[in-house]
Each structure stands twice: as structure tokens, then as C-alpha cells.
Amino acid sequence: MLQENAATGLLFLVGIFYGSLTMGLAAILAVCCGTLTAMVLGYDRTEIEQGIYGFSAALVGGALFLYFKPVPVVWALVIVGSAVATIVQHWFIKQRIPVFTFPFVLVTWVILFAAHHAYPDILAVPGVGGANEGTDITFPLRGFGQVIFQDSVLAGSLFFIAVLISSPAAALYAIAAAVIAGMLSSLFGMPEVEVGMGLFSYNAVLCAIVFAGSKLKDSFWVLIAVVLSVLISILMFRHQLTQLTFPFVAATCITLAIRTASGKFADTAK
Image (cartoon, rainbow, N blue to C red; front, side):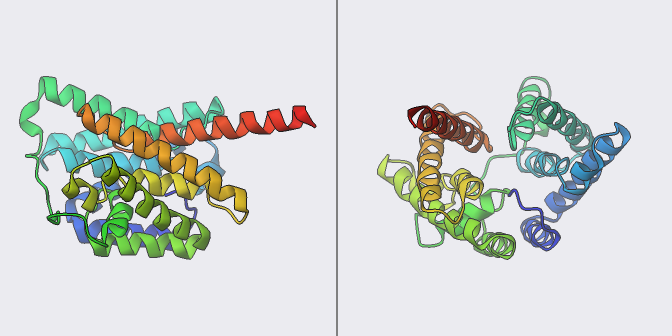
């Protein structure tokens, strides 16, 4: 969740292990593989220590055990996928293109596409997990949890506290964004179960964390990014596309472009 804080990362890991021992182990393996790849390829030491080459890898590891059965070939895919995500992350960094979690999205999409067409037997049976029957007041915390594939209130609470420790402003903006996203998705007629699970909130949480700040104008950019992420999520849901964190990436990049363009316009007008 874009936080360079070891205590925060530890709480994230606790939340993942609470939801799934396998997913927790996969996340650790993926982070180690991603970091080792960066070290072997001689990437910037400071960026490695900041965890820049670990977060997309960790998400790949978690996602693969959300969508696939825990069989040996999937563990091999975690190793390969996390290494590839690290290489893709580095390429975007060298190009100075802010893509956030897009390497994770891209690698996971490719693996899912290949598995569907070549090896469908390893795909997990879809289920609703711990879903509640409808939308209740816990959906914002579930939205926090869904950032790392957890639908429990406890995991979401741990993730919220983790961000709060690192950046109180980001945590408060994010919980507000989760509420707004849930309300908007309900307004657009999205299924109550999915809204209640936080599936339309987690991308908004990430958007809010990116644009959170101490200035009043920061709230405007948070709102723009959150609304865009919800609209993109709804569009992908209606077309039965695997979202992952793509709505967050797209909404954030669009909002950054708008903010940059508006700043240049304001400078020109002076």
C-alpha cells in the first residue's frame, strides 16, 4: 500500500497469514524471489532496500493462490512470476513511468490467460469465501483487506492500523474513500454481496493513499481518483474482466495527468 515502513509491512503479513497460511507463505517466497532477482541483476541498492522490487512480486504470489489450487506447478509460477514482475517494474522505473502495481497486474493477467487456455485443471473453484449476505458497515474495512486479497474484517482492520502507523492522513483518506466507493457502486446497481466484500472499495483505498496530503486541494484529487477507480471497476465488472488493481493504476495515472496539465495551464495563465 505504498508505505515504506517495516512495522506496517509486518502487520500486512500478519493479516495475510490470518486469512491464508498458503497465501502468506507465497507472499514471502515472492518477495524473496523478487528481491533476489533485483540483487542479481544489479538494480539500485537503495530501491531494493525500500522494497520497490518486492511489492508487485508479493501481490503476484498472493494472487496466484487466490486463483489457483495449491499444487507444485503454482509454486513454480510464483517464483517465475515474481521475478518477471520485478524485471517489468525495473523497466518502468528506468523509463520514469509511474505505474505503481501494474507489473503485478500484467504478469497475473498473462498467467491467468495462459492457464485458462493451456492448463485449466489448476484453476481454483470460484467461491464467495467469507462473504456477508449484503452490504453492512464493515465494507470499508473489507475494502482495506481486499487490497491484499483478504475479505475478513480482522485482516482489513490490521491493514488499516498498519497504514495508520505509517501515515495517519493516508489511512483516514483511504477509509473515507472506501466508504464513498461502496456508496457509489451501490448507486450504480452493483451486487450487494460484492459491495459488502469491499470489491469495489479496494482500488479506491489505493487511490486515496497516493493522493492523501495535508492540503485542502489534496482532497479534490483524492475524490477525482476515487470516482474514476469506481467507474473503471464497474465497467470491468460488467464485462467480466479480472480487475486486480488495474482500476487503481488507470485512475491514478489519469488523475496525475489531469493534475499535471492543470498545473501547466495555471502557470501559463499567470
